[in-house]
Image (cartoon, rainbow, N blue to C red; front, top):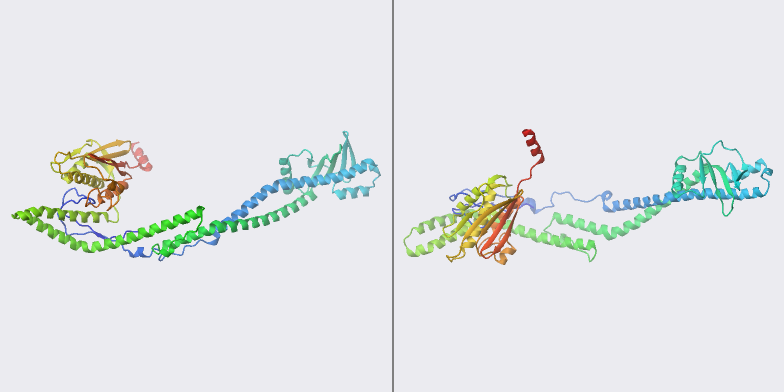
Length: 529
């Protein structure tokens, strides 16, 4: 959401405290104003002119869940089908071999040669075989034969075939069978004889195809039934609450200020219930924050309208105050410094508020800087008197990768806060020393701003970097530290309170060097090469 604050920048004839954006050289009061304004109409109706965002049925979670369930059940059925079709093939062959064994025992007890040709054909046709043989005591006897095939394509031992061989054989029959000749052999029941059967695989493949079709149809029915049950259960338990949350978020995004668009969480103790309650709390917090933002926007708009007149009044009061200082009246001389301080404080406060209210700080323009010279400029701007000691402990050759103006503002804000904190002690024997030092660890620079002030009270530490709440002194705005932290974060660094005890308060500014881009490094190496 854009910040619709409308601010005019006010320039006074003295550097303000707190949130003042410091200038390296004091400049007189100017009549020019710079306005930065966003049109708030775009943010009044965030859902206006936006298409109605809905999820098509084909891409919804319910449809995806339905198809995934069907696919997974079918996959499970396929995994079950492979051993099932292999078992069906072996059972079919064993059944035919058992029938041939029964016929063979009858023929062995009698005289196989007494059977006529027509009777042999009837027996073989009933079994679907070309020949029946029996092996007893190492001797093979051909009992019944019709048209003896010239060759046998596959030999199947029903008693000594592994599961993997059964699966591979079943798939081979389904894919390439129908014109092959099989030799099926093995014992049947408790008989000591081994029976053999020569038969084509045409009937076997036809039976397997019928079985596969029935299994596929049954699997599809099971998949649809299972998917429907799973879909109905999960849709009620998960999808509907998630759809409700999605609609609530879409409706809330279109009109976040409307309390009626806040989700009402259900009384659930699972993850969905936790998510609904968290969403409810988040939407409530966001509504409060948006109301505060709108209030601040209205306040900023009002401030921008009266800023011009207020600046003129302050300028006139400053001119009159300067003339009062030259008056000889002792009473006037006694009250004039207080009046000047009050006016300077008003100008400083206005500048701090207006500086903080700018919509956005420009991105830092980072260069290699000699930090010691920058600290000397900060010393000149602070304009400390003889009661204060300023120590520039930065090494002469120390370099830092940063934006010169923004780092100057950060150090000036920290230094001014330190000077104001130490000035609160009126006792002349107290040491008032402000020290700025720096150190480098690898590609990270750390600047320490240390003073001998009384330290920060606990209330100031709780909201140290919060605007209007984190002031370290009575009557301050707390904008200085808020702006300084924002500028340091723009450099990818951190601003933190390193230590705060009586007589030693230290703020640490940590700024890493810019990362080297790989393409620039390569082009530089090419130029050197």
